[in-house]
Length: 219
Image (cartoon, rainbow, N blue to C red; front, top):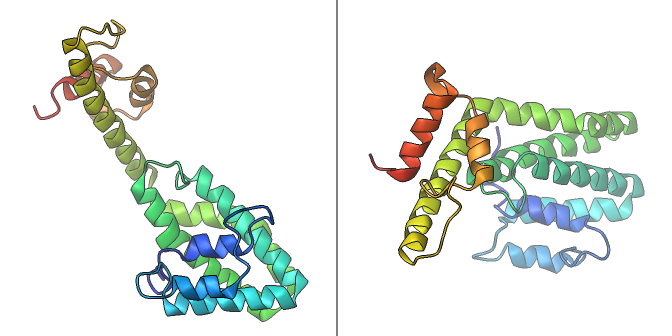
């Protein structure tokens, strides 16, 4: 599968910015902005800039293509958020997967459909895009992998919270007694307990594992 590398890491964001709402500060209407981003140190390659300039040109000449691009970017923006790759995501792998594999692959497929010029095929592709994105993501990132990263993030948060709790306790500031021992936030604890338990552990034993990791992450 083609990576975003030939286009540059800013390809997906620049693509969407071309079709952003008029009142969006990130909207790109000037081709020079694309060219500047392809300069040394920029986030677009020459190939990426060329592709985006072609997209801008064809969308200005053909209203139907402009609408199709807007629909494509709108659906992909929604998927970016729901897949855990949005701007507020704490999962760097999910972000990289979206920008480096999922968006480039689907934009390439979309470009091929547009080039053929069959409006029915374009509508069909747009209609199927949410499901295409889900299937592609599932093939690249299994649920077990996502759960493992989620657990790692929760345990790391637990470790940080435990260190913070120790500092807070040393300063004499009282803590919620239920979570004082681990320093884990209630919402993080609930999420961690809801994840699949390895080795068929009972909830009680799983809780002991999480508490031990939170209290002494290196033991």
